[in-house]
Length: 315
Image (cartoon, rainbow, N blue to C red; front, top):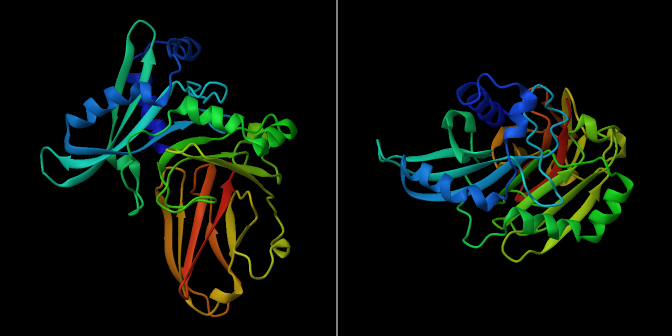
């Protein structure tokens, strides 16, 4: 959310300061993720050496972001968005120290592609597992076509046509439902975080597209507000979706040990990290009020085990 806010502020006040919101929205043209990559690379190369791209990101359903002056909505019918953000790693040309940066690219009528550098302080804490994307990754239009062709997606979208993904990230996965860790993945969660898209205690569809092979897997996740609904040896989050606080139901095999817990957002950023001595406790609480609306991966490690699950935050 901070990244998107910076993008909008820069664009609105630095570029079209006197333009009304509706007019501003009309001046932006949608495009595929790879279309803005060349310009983003040039911008990153101006401040860093030995650059490598870590990920690509855009906004999906903006129903939960009503304060924004521009609708940057991802269109699954063609894989296009009105703004893409590109994440890079490299060495600073000033300090020669390893650094991370991001560049936003938009396409304006009459002006073509425009680059909007983003302050690295807006990036938060990137996961230490973040790695460079391999060459040849699927463009956003190819990813969208793979999801549209998926049988589970077709069934889900027929039942819940208004549910859309809030975030559309591409990165080397630090958490995944279907593939090996370290796989380059497009990861979308439909529902779970969009007040305009049916975010009551209903299901969420998780879709992942392997960004090299194109293999696509989707699965419907039933969300619950009832802690008793979680089996005692399952790693679960309740309520799910959450608004103010969530509780993690710890598997029995991990109780009594020190547990390392991390929450990772759709960009691969670590938004919460702690070590907890459970002392046979069944649950661990985490305040969710400070988290932006969206879908998160929860990673829990203890007693030589590591488990992962997904939870949603709505506002």
